Length: 296
Image 1: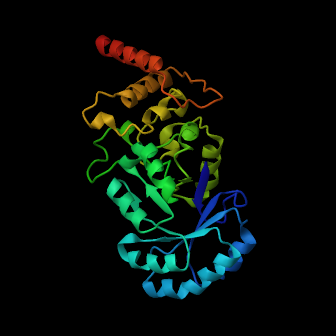
Image 2: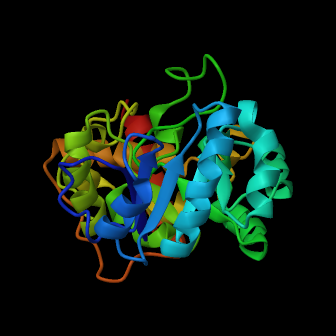
Image 3: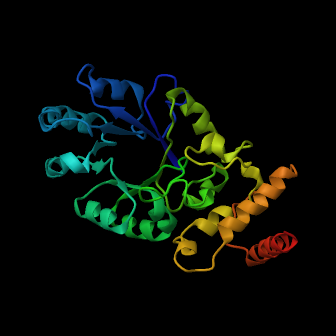
């Protein structure tokens, strides 16, 4: 899995991070800074999402120079205010994408027609990542996600939809998603947390609770209390639970995880990630859940 962080001087892995996001500024020579700081294999994203058209045009000579010195870069724009600028970047052969999120197929399709190099896949669309990846791969579009933000679609839904039905990725489930995601962009509310969060996701293990590392997720449960097939059960499920299907895997898993956590029991994870759903395990979980309901 490749990871992305917003640039900050305190980040301890600047020489190995896969991608760095820089905000455009005319104060310093950004080309020299990139040449001196990063290797060619490290991708640079330059954010222009809050700039005016005049600033974008004035930056073009610098971007063309950067293309010769460090070709592994892309420009991040705002589709709401800068969509017209994309054609100019395409003429110059400069990769670009939008800071705006794709939470539905319409936005994903529209951005693909505009020729983006990346898309931010969020919220409900993240439960369809198998299909999203199949759509993006032949179009050479990178799939980006925020693994450590609890996400739901629509206004007024947060706090109403069960927390476990939000999209998020535990560090332990990264191997399950690596075939369907190109870049995990780690979100932090304080930049000095970037190094620790990167270490956790890179190690694919976290001994603390979910709400310690995943923002906007009210689940104070140890990640090690979830069964190994939690990730694969959610990958590509399409949120059947909200569409009339009787699927209750997420609900059952979180109830079992709470019981295990209360008893201080951790689940031993296999060396090879679980990439297929074990129907026997699911059936046993359902049995436990039914027994609990009957006892209540």
